[in-house]
Length: 499
Image: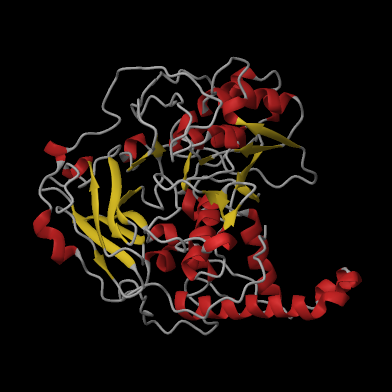
């Protein structure tokens, strides 16, 4: 799918990366064995229940007090045993299930059906491939092209699935398709020219659109055999440090360094026994000295965010379960049907009981019904984390985190895998037109400035929606949103619908 950008003059900016960032040596002295001081939000077996408020909170968080659902693997409040049976056992016609399920060893390396079509089209047209090994259309020369972030070829570029991205055309065919657009030709040609110019800049500075849209492999938390690297783009901050349960929220323990483009970074080496420096399930935040004062923010690329009992703002959670606990997809994404029959659903509101339904309950109770009714696709609303439940998921606070109200990221993967087992495609609403204006747990004023991810002033505020409007002309905003789309499509095996 293609999402359109507004007609803005895109600045010709270099990458927001610096080649001389090696903070491992700078901060290794601060990092001892944190296991003794860590307090995981998930290390409690006690259950609790909270009332659901439909009204809007007076707090900055705009949060409803909601029960957090969970899986058996990660202990969170109201944790329950899964105890689910195979969907094929629940269906009256199990023969409708995909016949030859393919076990996916690594979801990231699975090529989508659309990718294969693009590859075939590129081969037919003899167009040079803009892939991980041939970003400039020339033959590989056996030498590594420096990556501006760390001075070496990026991990994303090395590991990217070998695929081709179609070249930009001349932008004239649209007038053959719809002659009524000829009257707007000057403006449309201008906009297409801006797009081509931006694509050329991305190819030049980032190694192509494929690598540019895999920012989640560099920003946020990146785990390696040696430890964890955390990076955050916050040009307005004067100083920054990573804080959380893992270091007893000590501001001076893990101070970050800043490059010339406003990217803050820190490397945390593994503990002496080889365990990760940040335990799975730990609360984490970035503390910054900003033009608006000292501010603790949930990392912008966080993969899980939870509202703790008795609290209004959400907490960022370092989500990296051990290999034996990670959900592994067992079924490949179904082929695109000749005609889609889409069932639109809201997981939280899908129960017949007056409660917030979980991913596991939707998987076991609702998906079989959708299949029996004859649908071949399900479109899920309100998956991205949002503090204000009454927004129906359209005031997103944490773009890379699935809503914790319904369970964990692995619970969502289990739901999607079960849908694929039934031959049901999964579509997901993603909201990139605007974002929650929450300051405590969203992107608004993230680095203390009004113009960080959004337009400044009235241009960046939607008076009717009470939300912030993204600045699509910003290099790093484009990276953030495109990477969000890429991760949704590749990491959790769904197609997305821009809303």
